[in-house]
Each structure stands twice: as C-alpha cells, then as structure tokens.
Length: 106
Image (cartoon, rainbow, N blue to C red; front, side, top):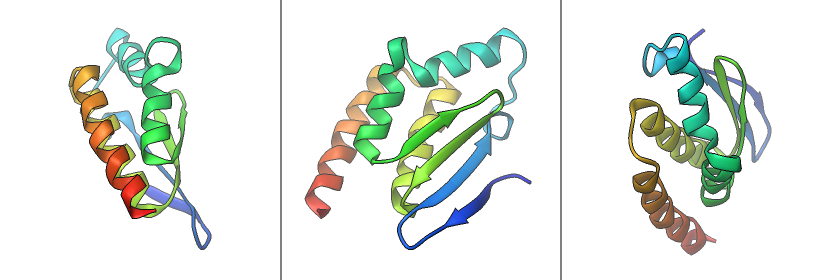
C-alpha cells in the first residue's frame, strides 16, 4: 500500500503516507526528518495544521492527515517539501499564501 484513504465521510478524509515514498531515509536522517516536520515545540506542525485546516499525526514511519480532500493535498505538499529539505522559512511563507486563499473561500 502506497497511499491510502481509509475513512470517508461527507466532509473529512483520513489519509496517510510513508516517509520512504518521498525520500529514502535511514537512521539519524529519519529522526531529523520527523523533527523538521514537527518543528521546535510543534511550531511547524501547528502552522501547517492551522493554515490548511487539517490535523496531522506523525508516527514512526507514517504521517496521517485528517481533513477535507483539498486541504489534505495542501498539507501533504508542505510536508513533502520539508522531507525533501526545504527550509522551514520557505514553508511558512507558502503557508501564509495558502492561509489567505483558504480564508477567502470561506
């Protein structure tokens, strides 16, 4: 199983994917990747959650996302950029733009 949607209701999806599908990581690199996604004191994870209106669960080798289909795609793109090595500042600036778009739709 590569990517899977296992729960569906009218508004929410539960979607999960594995780190190794984005980039092959082993040992210390995997723990560093988890740290980059969570950020210092959860700052990066909370910024992604608030900007895209999703909930993120970071497990050992799996990331789970809960939210609407479009918002999950936005959060997944941000997380994949972090895994590939983008600096968190660039992710924050992209999230500001995403947050404005999401607020305009509402």
